[in-house]
Structure formats: structure tokens, C-alpha cells
Length: 223
Image (tube, rainbow, N blue to C red; front, side, top):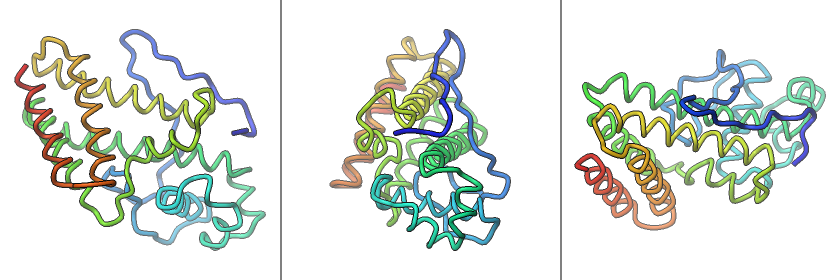
């Protein structure tokens, strides 16, 4: 993938929570933080283009949706599309960062609403179970993107790596606050179980996938 301007290399420093730049969401809907895109709504052209990308890229794949389709479904002109995003590559990165911002927002709400870190982990499991049961669910947006972009140096894969580093560290913070003896290892287990649940729920048995995720979470919390 080629973008119009060089993208910064994602770096993780010891003790630093990794966060990537995200597009402004001032005019975007307030989603529940899941990968499933929100219902379309009226707004400025830039917002409509990104909302269209959120829906089409997630439902049909990033590479399978062309600029002409995006322009048509967003009801904008080609000049407007290029004025706001410059290229499909830039829109793809905006889509990835917006997906990351939505997951961050959901996790923040989960933690803020929990009375203890253990409760937050269980609420996170419940939220994932709710997400994968939605009719519009098509798997994890980041795992899907990684499957489409094989080169780890690609800017899309850098956003995927940033997101996963942030996610694992956030789970590790919760486990550390819960007194887990090895919060990093526990976070890795939760992340792997989450990946399996997202993939298994989409490709197979939703109930089995989410039940397995819950069992893993309880074993990690009991450590």
C-alpha cells in the first residue's frame, strides 16, 4: 500500500501506553465501540465518506471496495472525495484509526462502569459476547485487515500492530490492578482467547466461542 505522505513508524517504549493518531470524530455517531459499523446518518461530506468506508470496508473487505463505489454510496463528487482524503489509501488509514478509537472508547466505558478490575474484565467479556451476536458482525476488523495486508511494514499493518499492543497492555493494566501475579501473560491469554472467540463466533458456533472466552477469563482471573 502506498500513501500520499510517509507514515510514522510505530514504536513502543517501556511503560508507555501505545496510542495512534485518530481522525476527528466530532461529527461521527457515538457507537458502542464494536467493530460493527453504526447506522448511516446525515452529516458533512467528510463524515459521510468515512461512515461509508466503515460500512463497506467492514462488510466486504478493504481491497474489494473501489473509490467509485465509495463516492457513489457516500453521495459525493470525485472532487469532494479527493479534497477530503486525497486517496483511497488515506481513507483506509482513517478507517483503521476510527475502528481503533471506537474500541478504545468502549473499553473506557467498560472500565468506568465497573466497581473493580475483575468486574471490568467480566464486563468486557459480556460486551464481546453481545458484539458477536449482532447480525452485522463480520469478525474483528483488525484481524480482517491483517489478512488482506500481508506485509508487516505496510501502514495498515502498523495500525493493526499499534491497536493490538494497546489492547494487550490495557488488559494487562486491568489484571495488574486485580493483583494477577503475571499480568502480561494473563493479558496475552485473554487477547488470544478474544481473537479465537471473534473468529470462531463468525465462522462457527457463537455460543461455544463466547462460552470458551468466558472460561478462559475466569481461569485468568483466578490465577
